[in-house]
Image (cartoon, rainbow, N blue to C red; front, top):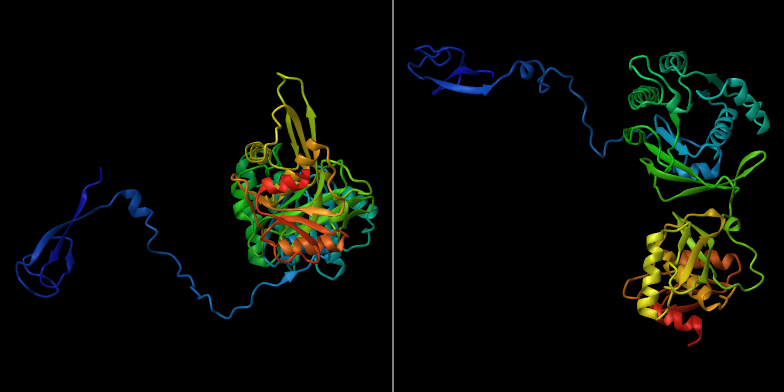
Amino acid sequence: MAKPKKRYVCQACGSVSAQWAGQCADCGDWNTLVEDAGGVVTPFQAKHNLQSGGRAIQLVGLDTDIALPERTPSGIAEFDRALGGGFVEGSATLIGGDPGIGKSTLLLQAAALIARRGLQVAYVSGEEAADQVRLRARRLGLGDAPVQLAAATSVRDILTTLGQGPAPALVVIDSIQTMHSDLIEGAPGTVSQVRASAQELIRFAKERGTALVLVGHVTKDGSIAGPRVLEHMVDTVLAFEGERSHQYRILRAVKNRFGGTDEIGVFAMQAEGLSEVGNPSSLFLTHRDENMSGTIVFPALEGTRPVLVEVQALTVRLASGATPRRAVVGWDSGRLAMILAVLEARCGMSFSSCEVYLNVSGGYRVQDPAADLAVAAALVSALAERPMPADAIAFGEVALSGEIRPVAHGALRCREAAKLGFGRALAPAAQADTGGLQLAGFKSLGAFVDHLLGR
């Protein structure tokens, strides 16, 4: 155990001396030095004290007039929407998605469009050879784009190459799980390798003002593989979602230090690559020439963009004693259980002897709480076998008490539905602006069910 360090303090002037003396050397007074036990100083503390010896940093105020980083548009409007306006100089973006979803295709299209504007772009692939990337570029009609390609996995080699000459405007690393740093022992893809490789690449991007894009693998549950700290190190995290059996893809911002996380970009996978979808509602609505029971259109809201999707429900009567099944695709199963409980407790509807199947068309995933009323309408329509009006939409949040509460941006949802030819809205009674739609307002779920069943 470290011994306390003795010191002697003058009671007259406060000077400190390492040993006792009869007269203070500073003020000259006699018999004023008194022993004072200082703090315990260990050898580790003496060598690792970070309170001194550093370089003073510059502190600036929030109102300091400094030029903000500029954005580089990718040339793809839906991509820029998810990014918040384009790539920011010196930023690091991580994009993840299932294998074959289109991450490399999207980034190659963006890199080619930026390079065609005269900016320097480097595309480094750790999974494919340069010839494979060129073949894909020719298939996409981008073979003449001046993108600098490389197939490498050594971070030292990549940074040495990028450090020669002017810094590129955009660097794409596909993927970060294949990168290897010779400063860390371990195979590529391990936690230490991913963290060290990403740290060196991000440091280069911050120092040289290069927009860095890292492609990340995902696990079976959809989260980005590797250490969780990787998502904290980057500035933007994008999730590329969609079912491989469907043509649509959704680019969603999970984290964005330079913009909001409530915007999405919608794409359609075609033979010539990913194409933008200006009207996403056309992907998720089927032809509604005939009235069908168990279907209703819900105006979902993704950021500032309304997306109309079709909610489908099916109920099947079972023999007594059988355990009913609940299957949900595109919505929260816990939320479905809550809606079924409210319909039974507050509205007198019995689903206990029925199998319930709920689906959101097109593979779209709804996270908006305003879908409660649309789901309830589809369930009641399916159970009673009463078709919903083909020109009607439904939205509203359902409380456990059966109250139908208003939701945000109801007027925006109604205006989008009016553009697509819908004529009426089943919504909370507090909804004021209906965007030209005929409003059927309800305060409680019981009144809503009575309206649907004609009670």
